[in-house]
Image 1 (spheres, rainbow, N blue to C red):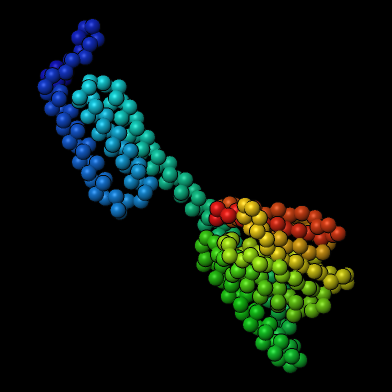
Image 2: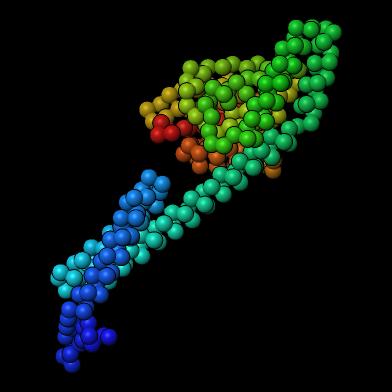
Length: 296
């Protein structure tokens, strides 16, 4: 069959005849059918798959056509390489997307663990405060109960939420938590908000665990009151969230706290290309700065 379609002389010269053209024509028809099938299915294919399949089919189709008109075996080899490259790109993209999806799921599960590990004494103290306020100050008891309900609702919503949320929602969650703490510690805890910019997105459970850290490490009932400042500002390249406190500061030597902050940092990087940095505050205390670029 090879001699009927083509042959190679002793001088290593390649010759083809009419049957070779017929065989190549069959390949052109098959490649054309594949090309038409891909084009017809462009609406049901994702953009990445459509581009990859087009590279795969077009490279082979044009290589065979070119080889038929102008005899260049090297063109066929190049077509095969480009076709294989198109399929490799599909496989590579799938692997990358699967890896990123798994990382998002892991980080989301870690954040959910933090929600489910709410400090038992926080819940106990809140319920105890509400119990005593019911007789001493019923209106205050109602307010604390409403704040506690909002806090729990936001926590459980964070478990089921994927991706990012508006900062205004995270701020609402944080305010509910801090209102509960203020009701318990009264004159020992003061909160100041300076948040003119709230219309940008962050991962859920970003701000609330940070202010929880401030209270855990900075509040001392035998010392000066703890002052916490939460502010947002807009820079040339993005939005900043800054949390300052005048407490004693803390070291990242607590396994759970370190885990929580690392989880926040990783989620900021993955979901919105942001970052988190911790600095000692002038005059004592801690400053946590979060940056979210405008591109997100």
